[in-house]
Length: 319
Image (tube, rainbow, N blue to C red; front, side, top):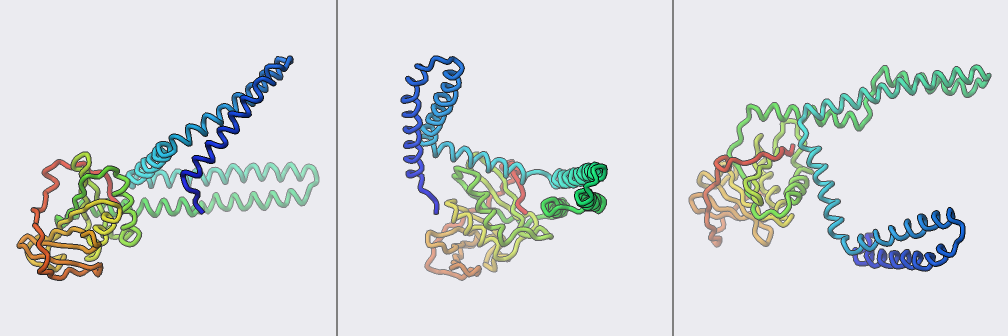
C-alpha cells in the first residue's frame, strides 16, 4: 500500500520535532559535563547528528515535491543518456564487461588455487578439495567465457540496434509525421513512446521505429524512418493523447485506406480517432484501427508540415 504524500510530510515533521526536542533537552546536560572529551563527543553525536537529521526532515517535508521532481528528472536524464548511446559504444561496453568478467574469474581462480595449496600444507584435505573444485569451476567459466545474462542481453540489444542503424542509412520513410506542441516535459513524450513500444518496438527489421525531433522549444515531431504497421499510427496517437499531449499526425492516404493524398489524424475527447483528408473527406475510428467515413464530422484540413524546412534537431530513435 502506497503511503500518501501528506502523511509522509506529517510523519517527517513529527520526527523533526522529536529530534529537535532531543537536541534542546540534551544541550544543557551536555554543557554541565566536566569531561571535555565526553562533551565534544556528545555535542557531535547528539547535537550534530540529531540536529542535522531534524533540519533534513524539515527540508524534506517542505520541499518534497521539488526534491522528488529533481530525482525523477535526474533518473530520466540518466536513462535518456543511456538510450542515446550509439550501438557501437554499447557493443564496446558489452565486450569490456565480458572481458572484465573473464579476468575476474581468472583472478578468483588463482586465489582459489593458492588457498587450496595453503590448506594442503595444513593437511586440511576437505577444505583443500573444496577450494580445488571452486578453482576448476572459475577457470572453466573463464576459458569458456560464458556471458552473464545481463551482458548477453546488452550485446544482443547493441547488435540489433546496429542492424537497425545500418538499415536507416539507405531507407526512406513515406513522409508520415506526428506533431506535438506545447510540451512542458520531454519525459511525457518518451513515456508515451515507451508504452507504445511495449507492443510495437523491438523488431529485427526496425519496423515501427519512432524517430524523435525537436522543432522548437516546446514543439516536437515524430517520424517512422523504417515504415510501420497499419495500426501503429493509431496506437501512437492514442498513447500520446493518453499522456496529456495533443498530437496531430499526417499519413499517406493509401496507408490509411482513405481518399486524397494525405490524411490528418487527431484524437477527440471521447478517445476516438478523427481524420480528414486533403480533399475534405472526414473519417472516424472508434478504437478498431479502421477509419470509416463520417458525414456528420466537419473538420478543417491543415497542410502537412515539412519539418525539414525547420532545421529540426534529431534527438533519438526508439527501436
